[in-house]
Image (cartoon, rainbow, N blue to C red):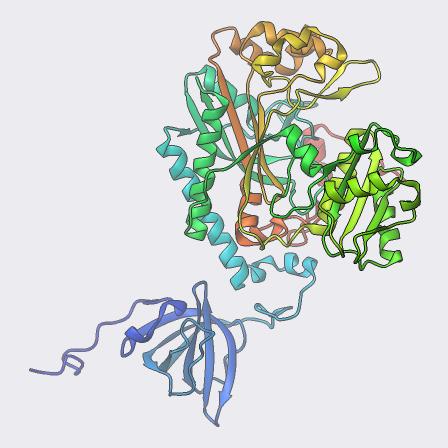
Length: 590
């Protein structure tokens, strides 16, 4: 039998790429492979040989190249060689391909590269503006490759979960009429109708409700949305959300649908399915954590102290609400640090902050301790479970302000990094329908005006202003590790309740028709009971990747100032374009 690799029987020609760099293992020893990627690093080995680390999106592999003096960092190359074991003692346990290397290499340079402005896998932090200016280089890094591919797995898992539950994907328009959504619209001038503008959607809210009128029954969309609002770690102008709506369902049904989709996404990334998501009422969240998006990974809960000081002689505690938190082991704080906490509390809206250190013998050391009775001091220690070495912080004021201030101090002093403590999902339910009263005594809505009141509270809509503030809504939020992932509600489909809500909000029939006419018209033809939800995929992916900022899971994000260093946007528009659109710019403000 003749040798298959003799000239009469040449070895089969390899494709442009036969394998990926990071997938080669010891079982592939002896295989002839064709690899494509970027030169990550070149290390000289003797006079003629060099070790070249070749990189693609799967990882690195070491190639032994003869005559590699023409290869530079980030050159794009094709290397054909044979997989072989590394010499004993030269293995790299920190590398997935660390047991092997590729030898007998032939190198083809596919593209040369200038020296990059920063190391692709640098050990030094790179200024974010530089990273975004050269985002195409940043995307080559292991971190960004992992994050974007994680995002793709999340989207795929969400789609699978929603479709398995009978939802149908429907695309809604990007050019719509401006509607009141709570943030500023991005607007697009119309060339064909000069002086008129489209708005880019802040959400597909009204269209998904129209889908329910249209009998779609269960709608979902991985929707692109835009809001002209200040940017921060969990907010961008452009964002992506899972948007869902269903007919003939209850709040419990929607929570089950969304929990299934989110659990499937988490399992696709972590390999473990989260346990059932617990629920907490809005009121309980505010009283215990001072936040409607509580981070429940750590303690330091707000403790009610108002009854303890009901008869106090200390004027600072003669308030409608007194609450405190215990900071374990923080009695070592210096006076300067404590003064800084007091300044923070005032900046958050408090009149002041009372601090107390628990001494080794259990006594409370504080400038105000002398104004409190022994019963009050003992009650403080008991109520807060304070032990030696702890720090106690107390705020007395109106209840909403007390909860707000202590909630922020709690996060500042105790919140762990986003990567610690696992994934703690939480449903927050029974939000108030109105968040307060304006100067005229009219209720201020806490949600959009199509949010259904709690069935047990509908009668309060005809009550006093105090009654209105007791009305609970059928609105619900999903929270993960202190981040609000998304919100939803049961919608109003009854015309009598909708008209009452409009009346309470001071929205006349003419204004309602102007703002929501096409939706109200649709409801006249038979609107089924329906409910929905939307959550931010950017936020979910960021937390699953252990990132503190959603920019790290978006391929081409904006900076915090709203600019794009890569494309240099936003940019001026040519005068001819403005003229075509019938627009004239005002001089800039001085």
